[in-house]
Length: 158
Image 1: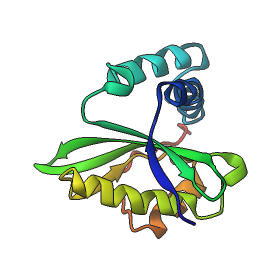
Image 2: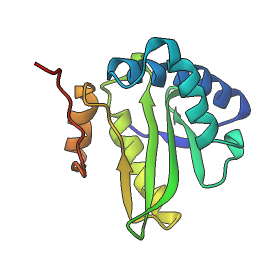
Image 3: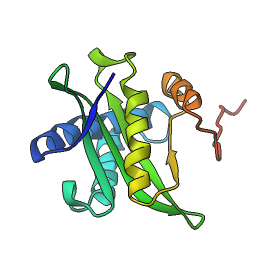
């Protein structure tokens, strides 16, 4: 399942933003963190803060996941270099395989390529956030060796 990490173009970056902002807003609503009324505005603000210069935001790496055998993009990867506890790390903001290509090993391959790319940038660890309700992603991350570093749990008051 060979894929390439191709730097996003202006066009693919716009497609990414058009999808990612409402998707993130919906996840925040589903998790109970934001109301529907505020979600898109807050999501837009978060993306603006994280990517102040868009595709050219320093320390951010935005890629299309490209399958050369198919001759098309099968997903996206976005990570940023961060320092956590004095240790340089790659923080994954987005790894998404388009629905029609899921469950074919693309996400695992994307993380393998991420490790190589991030190590070349000086990172020694990969970190990410996952919504608690995203069980398929959590299972994938566990298979890839990720471990929880902190958990925020919630339940209704009884």
